[in-house]
Length: 494
Length: 133
Image (cartoon, rainbow over all chains, first blue to last red; front, side):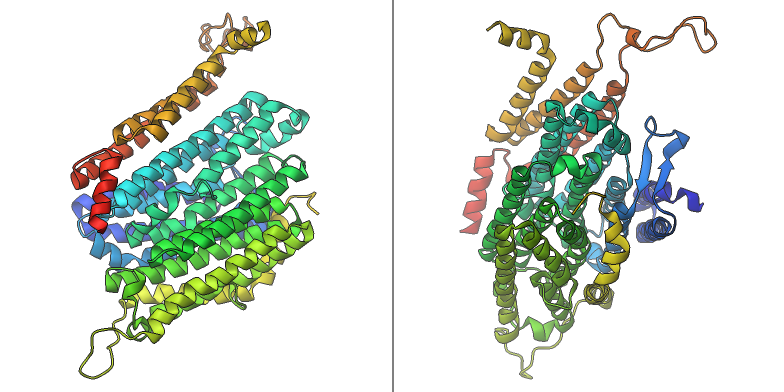
């Protein structure tokens, strides 16, 4: 059985989705346990795979026994081993944390919701685990389509925002498909490792350059890099809080992983970082993305919309980190995939708890919240400190690597953008804390003190676990970098 | 002039797919009606399917079925006699994806129509503006 972890990680949740959909018709109480089973198997397989990669090196699984480059190979090395664990862990924790709010928001749609949830995670895990460029497209669309449906399940403006996301997402995915088409035209192969060995002879070809540019453009749309971010804020702000705490931490991070995979594995660093001008312009693009997204976050008046713009800024961090093209920068980008997934999960779960109690999240309604929901707000504070980059939370360390990378590469514009964004994040979050801590609630209680009205315990415990994880990840940064990320970097990076 | 003409004629499949793709993108960006946008999205996806299918073509080649069976080792199979089936197979998957995308998009369009009673973007924005005031 242990030989088949790369297949199990996909097949179990995929089949579970059908059972959940069926259970939704027969017994709705069965949906959650089946989803939990699928996520547990995925998480266990992901951890087992990472251990196998650490002890025995790269794992290549031939799907259906067909050997690559003809068959589809699932190819796990350090880079996607780490991302697999992140995706599976976020999906697992979020499943517990959102159980009450799912029951509240979709009492009659438990079956469809959990089926989509599990399918979405299947898509993302598949994107990460696959070693085949076309297979990646198919799984990308599985994740995207279920994501549209999860976001569109909300009320009010959610369907409209989700439809706009479909338009942008489809353009992005189509561009990626077109880029893969050109790569196939140039090499005659779809297997990533095979393409990587065939490409160096034709690096001078215009077709290869075009394929690279089209792929990257498609991925930039998918990951919402400014100025291609228009779909993200609305889609994230109006969505149901149970789906957003799954989608927000994972979608953009997995797309950043795909970008790193295409830039470093399919195209080698020799091609990707060949022209300093091109790399530098990507870094500048990222720096502009960070600054603009931070400024736009300042003008928002509700928690979720502000967090959505912070995500766009964080995408800029990771894109910039990769295109710095040096060891510290890329280490920072990969470390930030882990940390940003954890801290985005933390702040969105906290926002979900606030929404669960208050039914709205505009800044005007947050008065006295520290007294009313002390634990949720404490977790929000830890998440905020991590996003700002205060040690010992994990956000500090990835930002530190990115800053070092920026200085090594001489990209002071990027360094300035990172520091600017940290300062803006301080303003953003302390504005919320000021309202929640110092402004007391309007309604006066006879006893003089507002009572504690926390979210239910099963929402609080996962949130506390994630908040603690932010600090634990911070303490173990050295181990993560030295034992895992160091080996994820390809040879030939200074 | 002759150079341009020869490029136009020899690479006509690329021109075809690029024009179709631009038609689709134009519809998605310019049109105000949501269903027209969805149709534009479909046209764009179809353009890419055309591109893939057209790169499998070979001159004077036939469908990739070896007529003399498994054991007819007498005949030598020459790859140049058969068109490349792989792009077609890939596009079967892409067509499924396109249909699924279209389905999700139309379902959301229905949900939007029920909520706003219109599919024109202008009217929806007016509605939202009035609601905010």
